[in-house]
Amino acid sequence: MNKEQNSHIVGYGTYVYIWLTLLALTALTISVSGVQLFGVTLIVAILIAIIKAGLVLNIFMHIKFDSVVFKVFVAVGLITLVAIIIFTFTDYLFR
Image (cartoon, rainbow, N blue to C red):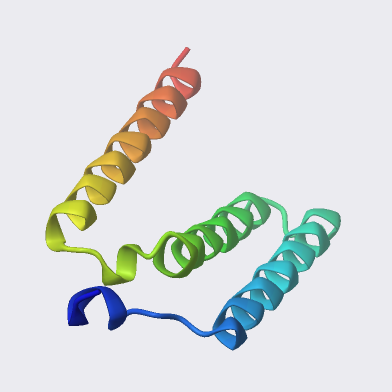
């Protein structure tokens, strides 16, 4: 085992902390869905989902510790997803 493989070991405490954070954010998402925030409800829910996805990608999937190539692949995938969502909503809005 070389030094590079051993340098990104994450302790169990970090995993438990991130898991509890994800649970809290899930509870927050459920709470936001029950509150009347008018047009902002969807935006708040999407922002919470982005934060949750970032935590999962960085900590549980270890993208934080991977090389730049993997980060670029993730970024290209996310940009493609955002483009598909934008095109879908644009098509839906202008029908």
